[in-house]
Image (cartoon, rainbow, N blue to C red; front, side, top):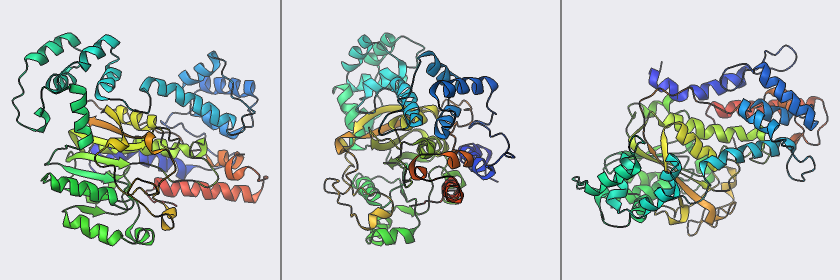
Length: 468
C-alpha cells in the first residue's frame, strides 16, 4: 500500500525478486521473459543462434546468457564487426570476454572512468566541440556557473556566454563566492570542500563501520549546518558489533552530533522502508562510498553469473533516489576507476538514465572527506582492521585510481520508462555453468545443489538481506 510514485522507485527490485522466485528448471519451465518483460523475439533468437554456431558455443551456458541479455543493436554489432572471442584466453572465458567487449563499447560514449572536471563533464553532456571547451575554460566562476546552470541547447553557447557576462548574481550565498576566480578551478573546489546545502538532510548509504558518517557529521557541525545526517548501514547492529568493536562508541558519537543511525537499510528499497516515510524530496546530499554487491566464492566480480548484481545495485539505487533527493540535490558515489564489480559506467550510466547529471569526476584523495577508515564491509573486517591514516587497510585497488563521481538531480518532470535491469541467470544456466565453483564438477546432485544454493543466495539478496 505504498504511494503510487514510490511504487515506481521499487518496481525494478520487486521485478527481480519475482523473476528469481518464479524461476524453475526442466522442460516444463515457462519461457523465461527478458529483463524488461518481453519474451525474446524470434529475430533476436536467430541472431543469437548464428553467433553461437559461428563461435562453436552452442553448449556454453554463460555465452548463451550473455547473448540473451544483448540488445538487437549489440547483436548486430557482434555480427557486422566479425567479433570473435579468444577461446584460448588463460584468464577469461569466451562469455566473459564478449560481455567485457560490449561494456567497453558502451564506455567509449561515457568518457573514461578517471578525472573529468566540470567543463569536460559539461562538454561531454552536450557533445560540444573543442573550441567551445576553450571558451568555457576561460570564463570566471560567476560566468561559468551561469552557463552550466542556464544552457539547455535552445540558444547558442555564444549567446549564453554573452548573457552570463552581463548577469548580476544577487544572491548573497556560498555559490556566489569568488565570482572573478577561474571558473573550472573554483567550481572544482566547491565539490572538493563539500559545501552542501546547510538546511537540507544528507544521507549516507552502505557505511559499514560508520567512520565516513562521523567525518560528515563533524564537517557539517563545524560549518553550522542544521540539516541532519542520516547514517545507514546495510548490516544489522549485531553483525556490526562482531566486526567493529568500536561501533557503539561510533553510534553514540553520531547521535551526539544530531545524526540518525539506521541499520539494515537496503539503498535500492528505501521506498519500502518506513523509516524513510516523509523524506520524499528532502535529501540535499547523498553519499555511497565504494558500492559492492558482495563477493561470491569461486567467481570474479566481473563474471556474468554474478556481475548483474553490481549493475542492478546502481540502477535500482539511482531510481530509488529520484523520490528522495530534492531537485538540485547532489549525489556522490566513490569507486575505483578500474573496478570490475561496480564498473564506473554502471554508476554514471545509471545516474544519467535517472536524470542525475554527471557534473564532475574528481580523485578521491583530493576530496575533503576522504580520510576515513575504509573497510571491506563483510566478514573480513573481523581480522583486517581499518586504518584511516592513509587507507592502508584497504589495499584491493590502487588508491590513486579511486574517484568520486559527482551528480546533480535535475528532473525534467517527464515520466521515465520502467527501470531497465540486468537479468539474473536462470537456475538451468547455473546448472550448466562450467566456470567458477562449477569448473571441476561433473553432472549430478552436487552440481544441482551448488546451483540451488547460489540461486537461493541471489533471492535472499534481492529481498534486501545481506549475505557474506
